[in-house]
Length: 296
Image (tube, rainbow, N blue to C red):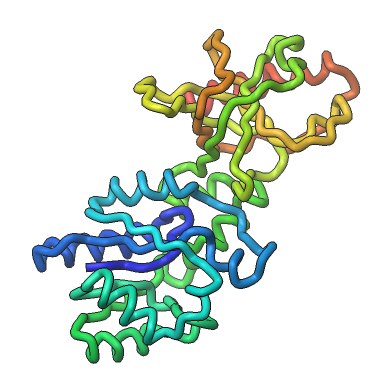
């Protein structure tokens, strides 16, 4: 029993689709399989067009596992695969390799060279090769409202609307990365920050200050910490490099070298250029107080 897609973000629409596949698999006493692709197909078909990435492959696997999936299968998306005709894709991948008995996909699912394959074609091919096909309806917040999609969520994050992104994702948007050395200015101001080195295509929210949850990964079992996180170039000090800097509340600890996750819960304000470092520090105290108020 398989479901197929890029599943970037594993958002609420993906979750319903995957849950349906898991349910059907259990009813038929079959293993449930999520088949996804890496890298993103658009980067292979149109180099340089890779969309902002909502979830790393590792995070995607974690989220899929939480939904009860038995097998997470990653198919390398190569130039050769991009040229495989829809009927060949079904025969070689779904039938010969996965031996599917049933497939669940979104009603707008396409596959094969030039995305020529549709749900109707998949249904027809399934009848030929002996598997059933179900095209699930897309998920919206309310009937008639915007459809939850990775594209919509990317637009929310790009605009800094992390609350809307969280509604569509079913959880706050997360950035993962390694904490690297910064210029030490935050420490001088009394707000030492953990500077995140994020993956190349990571969907970084719009410049601004956010209330976040900060989690240590790599086997740490500590609860999430609270952080006021700045995204931007630090215009008060004429910065040029765009950075993600998290000030973790109530913790005196150097996170250098740690792999961490930052979950964006609420946008506090836009990025501003202050007349002095003193004015910046005054605002940072307000940001921290607001973060504490929101997240406790």
